[in-house]
Length: 102
Image (tube, rainbow, N blue to C red; front, top):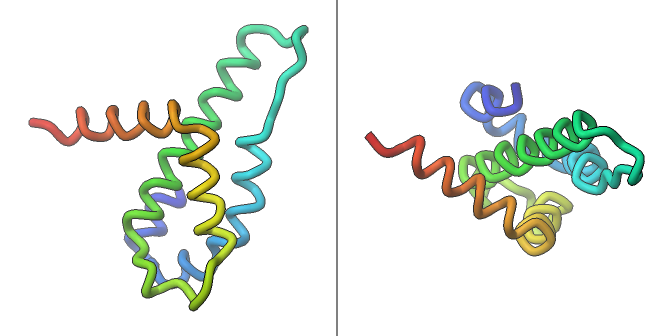
């Protein structure tokens, strides 16, 4: 849904990035107990992958000029995402490139 909002209303989406940041941080910080079943791990991994995918799309689509001056929560989140989840970010970027190839 957020991916669609990027194209429909980019300015309004940019204004809401800081609100999204808090929710996305919660998803990315989920740590399951050792007793969790495989389905729970898969579900958490898929949620994290989705957050990375939409975050990269948002970051690419919304120019820094649209964002208010100074360092925003969103910019900090994206930097942390790329640093703390580098493997997942690379995986999503590779899948995106493969999807774009004819």
